[in-house]
Length: 390
Image: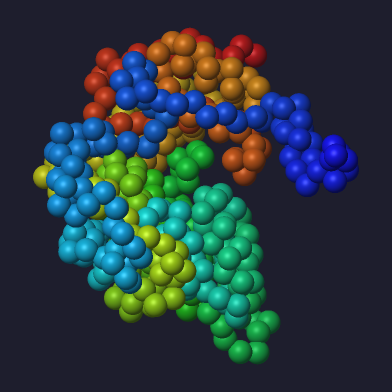
């Protein structure tokens, strides 16, 4: 018997799809071939290590020795000597007491926020934070307040108000990206840390876009801000951006890492990161230690792109790391602009609502340390030449 349309449990999906289509917000998957001819400024391979021979060889060697998968959660069979070695090297490189590797940066952020807060805690989250931090706040069961973007004074006032109105003290956590993924601007970490310390709050920093690019030899934004190893600071990083691999990690005091091992659901109940990704990340980290100039080169490439765009009259945001953002007139024209860039041989990111907190559509380019001066000029020319007219 034909199903009555009003009994269709997924009818609402068709309605939402139609609304997305009318708003010009439909997203599609486009498979990327292994030998793509496009110049890639859409991915996050900031240091140009994803295809480095040493990195890919290390991935293959790790898979050959340890297997294609880690076979279980880290607390069962998924914790290998390779995982432990990478954690020790990450902690030492970034200046923290200990580290814990997760299957993704997203999982690391969920763990850090949810496991360090809880039902009786207060979490202050920057208005520009990444979706993974936002989801961590939602899962935390804490009282969550969104504070104005990159505003230490707003954080200080919120903590002060909370301490005045409460009869008993409670845990407080301030959560922020170090470099925000939409515009590439950096958080004022010293000011945020001072606001936290004035009220006994912890600071959690997602350094996904700072690690490998900022700080001495790419040691990250917290290192550059003098916060590495601080007892009241926890940092998350990804292994999938500057290190060109996959996975994520939480860095911080040893007692915090031990707490995560015992309470973080995305650690306890998730299969451990596969050995190939661990081996690749370890090789990338060692390569970065040997070639620290890669971090400086990534920043220089970003600055060169920004200067070229602004000289051509485009509305670009000055980059603090490797993300270069160029504003578009509308979602539809942003999509067309990205497609025109692609036709010109350049892959760029296209950020539209709801991915952008301010509702402004953008092209998002990621500078790479391995780009030549000629490639920088070609990329900038493609963006400028295909820019929408007013």
